[in-house]
Image (cartoon, rainbow, N blue to C red; front, side):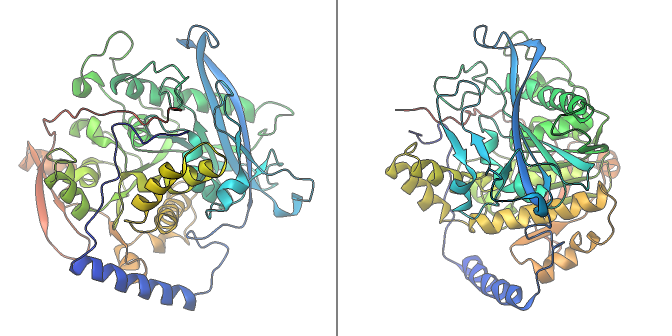
Length: 472
């Protein structure tokens, strides 16, 4: 059975006051507007024109150590979603099976139907890639301790719109209790994450050229983006801009944890989901010169968490800081109202699905369901997240012009009342450096001119714990 996430929480937001009343009003208005609008196949907020295929496989990196037993070399189970032609699906096509424990096989697979019951798009196991190949690629890294099957909603939705989404299972995080927790603290998984993604892209490149492989010719390797949730979002930033030394923020945790991480020149854009950019120095974030869109929590709730001691001082600028620092253009920031850090993964769907399989207790499921109910519905947050990510990738990775309309503050103000869309902060990285050597200025909200000032490099070093799900 799963136990509660150790060292983590889903803090509850107050459900009274004018902002809550406004939320009810805009939800009603959104529902009315949605009923009036025709849903088209290229609407990035809806399922796309492709069916979705899924495959998984194991790769190992001989340059880094594994567990010293089952895996002498660093293992990397891969989960890959990709576009499929609906016409190729028939009664014999098997539904996807997501490996829950790809390293040691002590848990059964999670069937696609188990997640479909909670609104996640269907996927098919090893179905042939669409004849429309090659497709652009998103290399996506999960959060610290989070497995790829906590991101099925995002990956499957992007695949339905014509993207290959490749997600590594990061060895050493120890989601299951029988997995070795090789990296109990944050510096070492931070060091390895971007290296995992680059190695996974190397392997995908090889498979793309391998005669007879399912993914032969599937990927457009000139159009590769990096994304990720939480620590995975940090990895995406590092892949775009590099990092001098992870230990300069997180401390020295021993051999193999410290040292520079180089950017990967194959990455043409980044999509961090509530990404942990706080690990990077402001000047390191400023090296990111590719197009970027960050999607995450809204300022009011970040401030609420800081004021209650749930986040450390300066974290109210979590999203704005990285957005202010990026040198690349365009750089967008999307804040989602009444969301928390875990809203950008599939906890609210996957944990109940595991409960249906007898892998999580009724009490645990009830706890998650109650906490999920305190926020904007998870499926709404996932729709908003994928909508902006798809519009961004279509425009700035794939070169399609018809999606640009979604990437404006005006569209968000009139069509998406639970989101705020920022194109720029108050000042560019260059003017910030010249005029505010230790601080930066940013906007709190989209509609309005209220600004705030924050330290470029907050001095606090938080004590964090990984996600885990031990069996009782």
